[in-house]
Image 1 (spheres, rainbow, N blue to C red):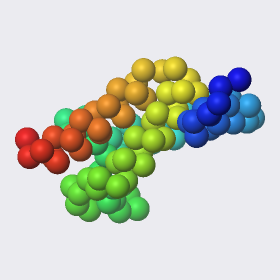
Image 2 (cartoon, rainbow, N blue to C red):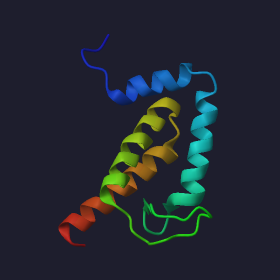
Image 3 (tube, rainbow, N blue to C red):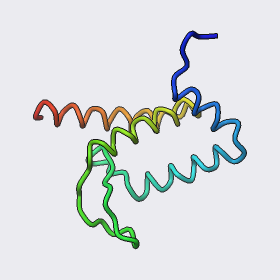
Length: 101
């Protein structure tokens, strides 16, 4: 048994053991992918009306970094590379903004 267990490993185990956990993850993934994710920008937008119309194009670093953590946990639970790919894109975008690219 390892000395340390990451929060992602705990979340992954919980997700696999929870009834309908993987189905719920698939549903959430669909909403993120179809409503929030901007593939051209490599991050999510976060302000929408009730009808899903974008209110602004704001992409907050805080919300995107929390999503990065969730994507890494989803990857640990499923081993689906798409989760890790999106997490890497958000991190890369954040770093590029920080260094002024």
